[in-house]
Each structure stands twice: as structure tokens, then as C-alpha cells.
Length: 214
Image 1 (cartoon, rainbow, N blue to C red):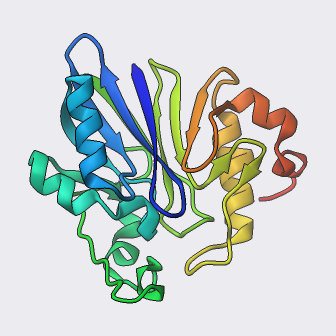
Image 2: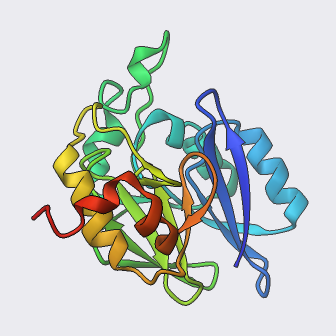
């Protein structure tokens, strides 16, 4: 898997183009803004996008999704538990900006543990509530890759003070769910740089809570 990162929008969100070098097909993860720029990079890479994967519904992760769906004619995938937030400007935080009214309907709503196949890869949705109630990560086991959204960052973690956020859930999602993945798993988060599960077990502030939250 060849992964290209674009930092987009005013919140500097990490958008990823995950491409299969054998098939020249790709998925785009969290296109938060700058649709034209994302399209330009896709064209530069010479790949064909087959799906858009959303880790959660905040405006800075979904802002360009509708435009790109129309341009490419591909489905938008999200966790089934994030459906309401995607459709509600107050919950997805777009309403806090003048004229902001993002309402997005995903084409494919996935359950925890369900696998979505695209671009020659099998992306397993892992429900990781905490940052939002329907936050999720996408794990490609064969490639050893995790797109973690705003659940897990390099030496950090997502905020819990937004609508549907929950601190206890976030700690559990990170320390019990994600830390159960292999240490060598490469983690591509929604902001900042990439990391690994093993590194986060050693350096993440939440690591000390492992085994203490039920």
C-alpha cells in the first residue's frame, strides 16, 4: 500500500490517499477540505479512487466528501453509529461557522468488525467511541496499517469535549481495543504525524490506564 498524506483545511486535517500499486486503485480517507487539491493529487498519482472512508463526522474530516463523491462517483463509508452526527450541523460542528451547515449522508454504514473491500484491500472497521460516539478506525491487517482518525495520535489522543464525546470510552478504545493490535501496526492519524501501536504503548499518556478501565 502506498499512502500519500495531504494536510487540508484550516484545522490542518490529515487526508490520506491509500493506493494499490498493482491495480492503480485507491481509497481516500477523511477528505476534510480542499476538494480540488485532493483531486489534483489523485490525478498526479495516476490512481482511480474506489471509495471514501470517514473515521468520524466532524466538519474538518468530511468537508470535501460530498464534492468528491459527485466527482468520482464512489461511495462514502462511515460507522453506522455516526449517521446522526454526519447529518446534524450542530453535532458535526459546522454550525459554529457563519453559513456552516454540513449535512452528509453516507452510502455505506458499517458495523463494528465489518470489512469493506476496495482497491484490492480489506478495510475492517473498528468502532472506537470517545472522540465522538461513532468514531472508528480502519484496519488493513495484511498491510499492517491503521487509519485512526482522531482516536489515537502520536503521543496524544482526541478531544472528548465535543458532542457525543466520552472520556471513559476513549480510554477504553485506545488502551484495550487499539493496543490489542500488533505492535508493528503503522498508525495514520487524523492530525500530526504517523506512529505505531508499539510506540504508543510506550509513549502515549493513556498507556498507563491499560487494564484499569472496564
